[in-house]
Amino acid sequence: MTLHFLAERSPGDASCRDLAGLASHNPFNTAAYAAVRSAAGAEPWLLAVCRDKQLIAGCYGFLQRGRLTSRFEVHSLPKLEQATPFWAGLVKLCREQRVAELKINSFGSIDTQIPKLDRELGRRARREYCLDLTAPSLWQALSSNHKRNIKRGKKAGLTLVQCGEAEAAEAHAQAIGQSMRRREARGEHVSTAAEASPFLALMAQGAGQLFQAKVEGRVMSSLLVLRAEKGAYYHSAGSVPEGMALGAAHFLVSGVAELLRDEGLEVFNLGGADASEEGLARFKAGFGAHPIDLEAARFAVCSPMQRVIFAAMHAVGSRL
Image (tube, rainbow, N blue to C red; front, side, top):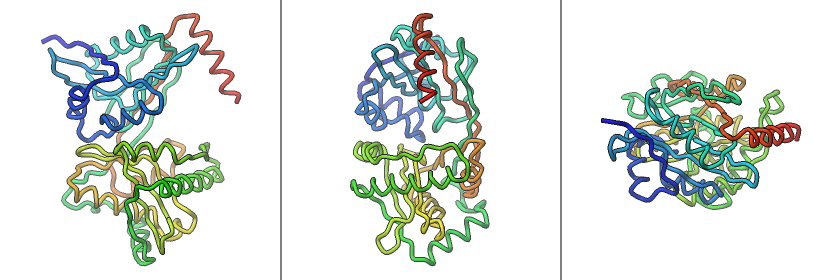
């Protein structure tokens, strides 16, 4: 039977349920996540490959409209066969919507490669780390360093708390800021700015859950995870200096993984770490998580005149 490309603007409940059912482990395929992006000003689109009227692969795309140019972004690319009409349909959609830049990412994706398209602006390899929560022995491959830190955290009296209040989101943002400043001091190129509002938005829509490791009521480490029916994704995390000394981050991730497993989830994706982030990669791999090699890419899909405008804006922005 013939495959065809489907692009549905502001998809309805039935379409959202169908999409979520295609990838029950992927929090980026949930209606709650799309609602968060919509509330932030992005126009959600359901992008899918269909056989007759049945979706066989799909994801959300988000259109950000500007006065001169617009950007279309796919956060989590589905696994696709190269012969599907997905890519031709997506490029055509972008041109119809006068999109200047198409940005493809692979958060929560599974073994996905991005084909070579015309006018590629950049491409980078990335790697994520997935923890199988269905394994008979969850911590069989836990590193000795992680075991020591988890034991240290328990001995220090750390407790694991699920949070939903604005104050907890503020503490989460502050912990991330402190972690980023430590990484910046080590020579890594990272942003040290973190605001609580995006985290609150994810929590308010039910797209994310916030967990914190505390001692005597003080936050030592904080972790926000995105949720799907059968999977979770490590969205953001941070620790204060005292928490680092107590092994709070290791205690927190291991405790959250056990909670998710007990709730019946099957996969905990610990997120990505770039090649320059060796410490972060060791931290995530140390839980026994399986590495998945992925890609991200950017393309210009606009008219020649729009490309000139976009290139000028991009050059100005890179100097700011």
